[in-house]
Length: 212
Image (cartoon, rainbow, N blue to C red; front, side, top):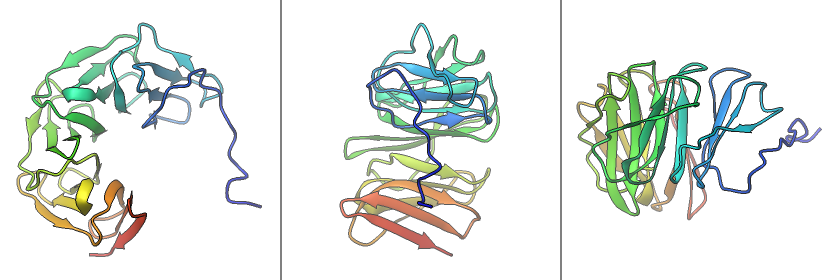
């Protein structure tokens, strides 16, 4: 059978663009849209329902640590938190004007945000109290960082334009930055251990693997 024969189309009831989807478990999932809408499913996507009132704004990312506690992010430093599954949201102060493209949390307290603004405005933010306070980490690049991956409390990667890859092995205290060949716009990164990981991107089309 083909590699895609197991995919089944689901109905979102929206025509807006989505950058991200996140599931806390096999039933509870959320999709933020560029229109500011946020969809929620409690049955694995059989039914998607718009949360009302919608969070609003131009949304990029969402991340939930369980069925009730999660965050969304968007343009110009937007980060908001919910503790009731998305029914209500509280704005948080990110201390950045860059767009927050990606969120990832280790638990209800510790999380990271990956940011950029066009071709610059690089920032990686960290919270240790659920987003009450966000602190900018000292990444060694100005290139926009749209994507990142948190393996554990110490090993974190952020990638972005111009083939930029920056990594910390001490939870963000210090960072090493490099560039991969051909300067692609990197749009994804994933690691399964501190040494083994992959990068993907475009312009030109890029898939890369590292084992060190």
